[in-house]
Length: 320
Image 1: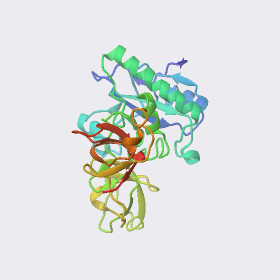
Image 2 (image 1 turned 90 degrees about the vertical axis):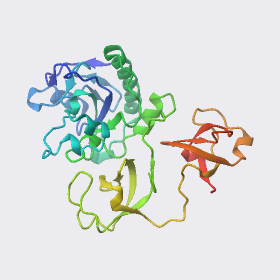
Image 3 (image 1 turned 30 degrees about the horizontal axis):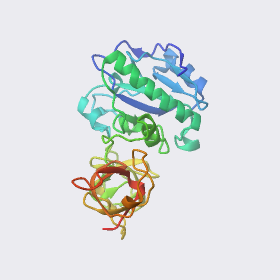
Image 4 (image 1 turned 30 degrees about the vertical axis):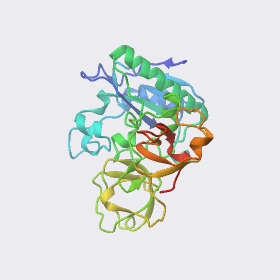
């Protein structure tokens, strides 16, 4: 792909011994040229490895061998960017500045306009850029960068207090990951079903809830109100509208008669293709299948004697 190169002085020389295995996506809150100019200005004390324009142009500002100043986390527990406040297990476990092991992509846009949704040209460019980054990381560092939702992340997951809306709730993470992977989301994608909760559930914040997962106090008007789960991670959920992470113990599912998809569920296939893109034969669609494994949006059906194939969750209906 065609990548313009400019050199930002705002960077670490090297990565303090770390190898990059995570891509963090951002929104610029301004124009493409304006973002490049600001991120190359020493006064900004900020940078990114790449900037992607709405029309698909890409500029690289920092060499991948060096750390950009874009996702900095602190070791100070009182800081708003303390690594321990991240919703990502890898960030919390590594206990160091996330700039050392991340690659940053800024995307031209304004959160208030479209909540992070990329233009078609921008999305295509980002897909090709991530493929390029993966190849470069393997060549330079000798590691295979995973392409899944645990390694292609938003700034709001690294620093949920200081950057709760970056890049935005409409950023097309799943589409991009699926395209980079050749149409298949890898099984390492974090599960979208967690206990009694799943993405898309309408939930109410309990009256007894006191703090968000980030440690901030929950306002009284939030309690008792209904929201939709946008994402699930470990013990917490990202809720629509407020776009904040709340512990699962502090929310409850709205009463519903709809069954929950889980291992052991009996299902019918309503789609026409497997997750691999192959056509599903009529005799398979007419049958009843058992859920053997849930891997994000992919559901394994009928292992141990069944069809033993992955189907996307959207192409199933639960019958028991």
